[in-house]
Length: 188
Image (cartoon, rainbow, N blue to C red; front, side):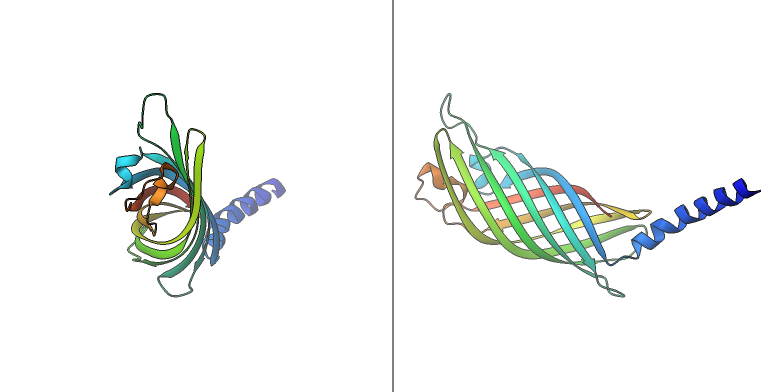
């Protein structure tokens, strides 16, 4: 009898734990995925990867959320010359606001924000680094999995650079740095 009571108590606790965790307004998240350069950046860089750590605050009784994130992206340079390798890295800090459309277990949302981007390019022994401001915006889907929320989102990051990630190349032409990160992640 006592064993059966303990089993029921554990089962009930586990059943209630996800709903209690889901009700928390502040959540921690991690994600990563593919970084796709577009516009001028696609002529210089191959597709790359990124990772992010996030903190999200869901506004009570409203479909709004505030999110802060720190991210790292890496993109390899397309062939410059035989035997010459290079890469571009981006370290970012962003503040975003999202608006969710609660329509069931799958919640679509739109997201927009601004932040700082440290862009660095390394070509052989030459490197250049600069910090610029930028904006981003996009859309995503969030899936509830008990106390965990999984998400997939795509954004357009527009880094306000005059030479973009090509500053280490000594380019004097204007270069737009537009990256589309496609992120898969979780919040708990």
